[in-house]
Image 1 (cartoon, rainbow, N blue to C red):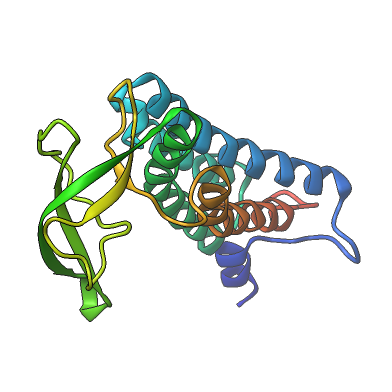
Image 2 (cartoon, rainbow, N blue to C red):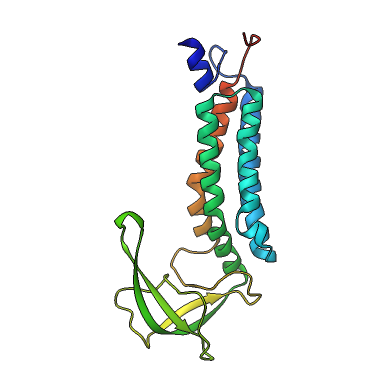
Length: 212
């Protein structure tokens, strides 16, 4: 049982408070990974590089932390949890990065709704309304808008849309609480969970004796 516990959760061979060296190492590993994931997608969205903006590079950054934890001998359960949380953060980051770009350099314009469709979220979630719109020049937008599109929205209604003049991120409807703060709020739980789990994994990797 002791061997199984060590393999699954890590040896954690210390008494009392964990070594400060491992605490600092865990904090550094977690924060660097979170920063790398978020930074790559923000840079990709800002510069229009699909490999970065789509989260592919972020996934690579996310998987680097589990590899590091495996190298230092962390428990397998914690390594798996870090991998899952890192992938979730990397998948959430592109939408948040697009919101940051639109908040910083986006322009607001009024679009006209041409049609409204109802799309249901996965697993029977709350219905989401999708509006097809045309811009002020009568050109239809390729992206259907769901922010600001509600059950009361009808064709011919005006809908506020923010778009990127450089065309590097798709337009979206205006939503209260969006922008940089909204993006940070959306990513904060995943980032905090990833950093905290990485910290625990590094601390529990403490081994005073050579593995048998």
